[in-house]
Amino acid sequence: MGQFGRRKLNWLLSVVMLAGFMFTGAAASAESASTDASAGSTVYVIDADRSVASGLYQHLKRAYDDAEEAKASRVLLVLNTLGGEVGSALDIGELIRESKIPTTAYVQGKAVSAGTYIALNAQQIVMEPGSTIGAAAVVDQNGTLIDNPKTVSYWTETMKSAAELNGRDPDIAAAMVNPSLKIELKALGRTKAAGEVLTLSAQEAVKAGYAEYTAATVDEALNGLHLDQPNIVHYESGVMEKIGDFLTNPVVMTILLIIGIAGVAIEFMVPGFGAPGIAGLLAFILYFFGHYVSGFAGFEDVALFIAGLLLLVSEFFIPSFGILGVLGAASLISGVLLAAPNPKSALLSLVAAVIIAAVIVFIVAKRFAHKGVWNKFILRDQLTNDKGYRSSVNKADYIGMHGVAVSPLRPAGTAKLGEARVDVVTRGEFIPLNAEIIVIQVEGTRVVVRQTNENE
Image 1: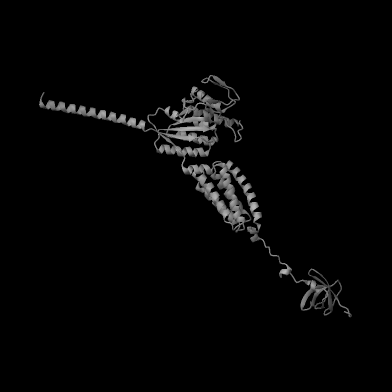
Image 2: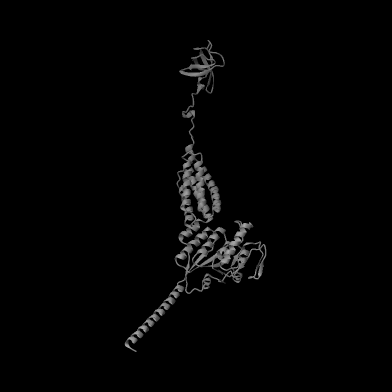
């Protein structure tokens, strides 16, 4: 082999060796990357142990946004709820479906009613032993079953669609909603009779294909995901979120409304204290602050409330025949209701607050009646004679006084009594000009005279 041939062979061997090293390095890098990705998988554990309402949706929205920013690979949603609002459940279901992060719902205790729908939207369901899922019939706020055909049909199909989304038996979902259905549940080996609402235990859920496995704890549920050295992040509500949850509690919300209404009303009606007005304004500020940080209220709700307050104040100074007062009250009520997660519940709280605040204002106003603002609109000075006020000359002093008729009295005319000219009247007789007269009777402003005789 010539020199050129050896060089060519050496060159080929070098290329092959280099390619081998590159392939080996790439494979090692890929394996390392795979290992790192597996080892660095982040799982967000999010608690949902409350009633299904707007507050829960806002909580989960923030948690899922945080998980997406952290590039989490999975969410473990810990469910423990008796249900709640259908509208909020639909919003949460949409949030789970549209999230880029797959969700495993871990039913810890119970996920009934609207909670069942939330679980069905998750890609996986894990059940705690002894937990239940189902009983998703539509009921009103009093727990009474709603048998409206349109409502039942809509919710039944919605539940079936959520079940089919992840390969679960839609008939079982329908049996959880519609008590009038009679369904053969082959997976469970029994029949759901009419008049019943289906509820599954943890073992039945696994048997029916509604749950992947059971886990006694959150750690066991995480282990069942078979992730290598996952990075577990327990999502915690921030301080502001906790404050918002506290301030939007129905009881706290009602107390704030009572303090706000009573404080502002007392300050308007019995001015000069300062403390009630400050307390009332602070209560309203806390009310709207709590709803704002919880994601319920916007600046427009606060602006509507402030506008209503200004209109009510204007009613005291600008005569509008009550128009400004009515507009102000409507703005105040609208601001309070629109800021609340549940306007119907907020209306009940507002009515209760108005009644209680009215009682408080009445007691305070009665106690400090002498300082009331109404005193500025009431004339309390009595224009009596002993204070020097006279609405007219007191003509009772004319009785028995002699005078002269300065005009013929037919029977009325004018007479001069002392230095005063007084309108007088006779008892019907005619008295000529310049005749001497005497006052015999005074009735209010009516002075009765007669002509004097020679003896007088």
